[in-house]
Length: 267
Image: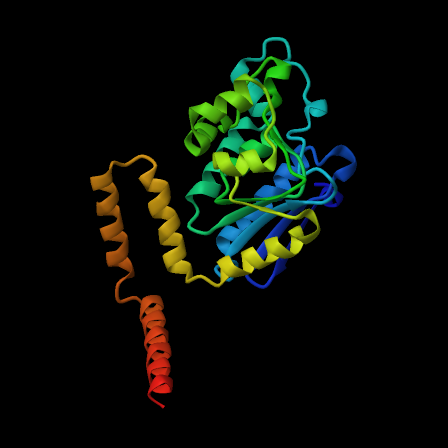
């Protein structure tokens, strides 16, 4: 791995993976993907880490996968072998793991987010943008379509209407349109972006972890369930949380605040 191309660091309960290849628009290489995978495993396996943040240095979040490293299919090589050689199966697996892990994954776009980088971002729980960000899926320029789950995740996120805009029309989105379409959650001024992202991650990390993870699980399951099935999942999850140490502590803290407020009013 090239340690210069990415940085992994923990700040309390927040683990950050920073792409650090600004001279190449943070185009994602195999070594950068390996770094992302290593950071994810560290986050997954350490209960003290509550939020995983993916960010970048420089003007671009990422131009997508580094296509300069892709060689044509070798003689006799099948399409499946070609995909395996360039890690497409591994990307599918990792993006699925982002969605399945009962901890939040946040991605921060300080600048353009293109192609495979947007496909990765669609598997994250929260997408935050600076007012300098833009979004595009330019695979049509190479005679292809998004190949790492981007088509299905995009339709589930913004609907077929805006998926056609990004994929078929091959046109970009500015952050304002991305926000209105539901592609991102919030826009921050570029000069305040790092501070706002850090504050958001601290806010997430302060949420009760068991309930937060259960909420993520319920939301992910709800994508494929009807209303009755969704309510049944809610009941099952709340039953598992009821009477737990975390819930008891939160209720006691609420009662203490309520009683203190009532006592102050009585004085």
